[in-house]
Image (cartoon, rainbow, N blue to C red):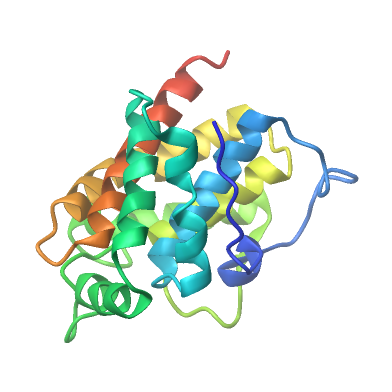
Length: 221
């Protein structure tokens, strides 16, 4: 699987700053599969954090070259994301992003774990997440005001875990506890949102990737 996208800002500088890292592991070499996982999470985070600029859209168009003709659901959804990037301008996607996630008071979707799990913001799922982030050595950057259970923030955290060589058992626990329990529903909602055009493709890719991660972790001892 190939996924090479530069999202400009190191993930942890956007939402979280790692307080501690294992000595010598911050620049560890990871295998191709782990690189793919980290890049996929980082890409999803970038597209949920803000609408893509022209540079990111141009990078996305390259996905079709590597995935054309592949029957795998994840690969096909990646190809469709690339095709969607070719068909829409950054300006149009910015308007779409506003309608989906910002709106007049509230967007069509509310991409927070607490909202999906309880129907309210800033509830116990966020408190539990903050406890776990503290144990893992993450703190929210001072420049960020949104809660840590935003879908983009969670993807950024696990991308950083993978890149830093965090044990798979820790990644799995974080994924199952704070992501798997609601993000598949969120991506399904995104794929079917009335305001979504470009972001329908991201919703389908996100759903396929969550399924991939579930299968990946189920195979780990």
